[in-house]
Image (cartoon, rainbow, N blue to C red; front, side, top):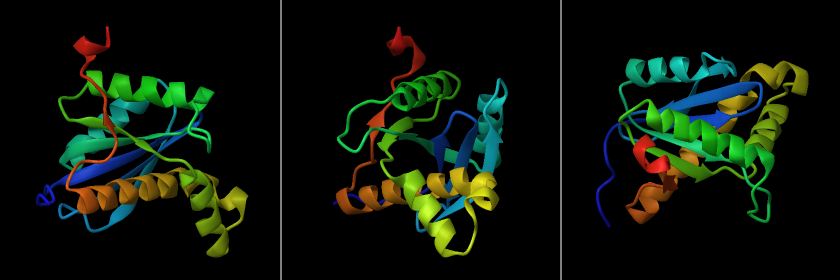
Length: 157
């Protein structure tokens, strides 16, 4: 098994209204919440600022599919967001399965005593933490980065 690649990675949970962002330490031990970014024309710019701020080496974008693995309207949205992100950075962008990450995030927040209404502002960050931690764990177990690479912009045409 190959050695785990050192460097900060960002996990990105794309939603219709908000984008949750999480990061890990350079050794990939622990994913932690960073920020909830409002989903608007400035979302990508803010995420790219976070990439620079945290000196990230790779970005993982959650790919929401149905439980059966089929695409949903959110799947197409996440793919488009990831493609736009890949077009605006030279870093690797990878799509990772995030089935149940938001459900798990709501459950974890409920268990901590937070109501769904109080959790709204951070649930996307928690979902990003879950998808990033899963991606880190996959790489540690397999020696290969999790998910599927998003091709650079010129290959998307």
